[in-house]
Image (cartoon, rainbow, N blue to C red; front, side):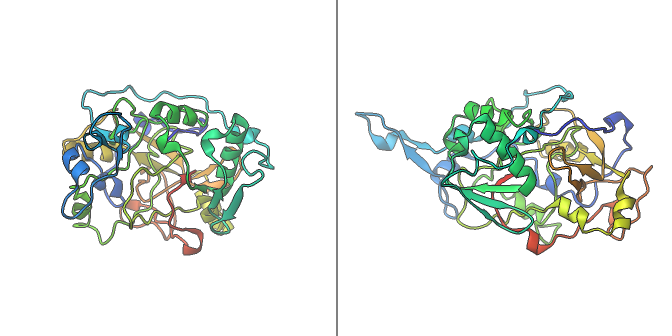
Length: 352
């Protein structure tokens, strides 16, 4: 579930950008493009991978073994080639973090424990069920997410809510985003699924041209109003793996020298969705909406905290009409930003 939560900021439309070529930093395009999975293998498993979890229905008087169902089958992905959407239209975003009580009485009240994961990024919170928050509590959640960037909540019930109820919860934080190419639950394209079928070998194809799967990125920044808040919750997961990392782009900006920061102000970069769409089509997958590209500033200001942050990643391309001086510009003029291990940690989380 990935609701957009970004105010309208000046940006250049698709018709104003220069063409870009696929080059360095195209990890998400290479890895994407699935169009199906083997449901039978998903249910029964294979010699190398166990079956997905199942639950037993409470039907009375029937053979329970015949009523085993795949857990969270309502979340299984679909790729409907007839599902087409018009271009996204601008919308006015309400930044609820500005309305929040900064003492967090509902979010961090009695019995709730909050522990920072690192000094500058991430907080793990226990003792609260997010689905039960009032609108005032949700506003506090938006504020704390803006301040700490990544919030981790264990033992939540989002996965057990109906998908319409989960989407209704997310609507508070902004308009939902519909991904152009990813698999989605039937009739719910607002859900962006991270799903690997039991016979999926796309990672092996990816590693034919890369030394690792490491790739810093921000999702769908090619949109004119990119996502601001993402709820990421786990349905089924392997016992090991993942290695999901997050980075504090506001701190990355602050660590630059004053002169370097000054050079970045006013510069912009092309964020393109064309490569992702082309990759999906080349694999026989779908594109729900015509691809777009947008030009965004390299430095943006958060509407709640007022922090300036770098808004660029290795998948961006620099428009030919802009000049940038930096030792981090490499092949295809792609900006590579160093990560600091002290500010990142492996987590599955709700992320801002």
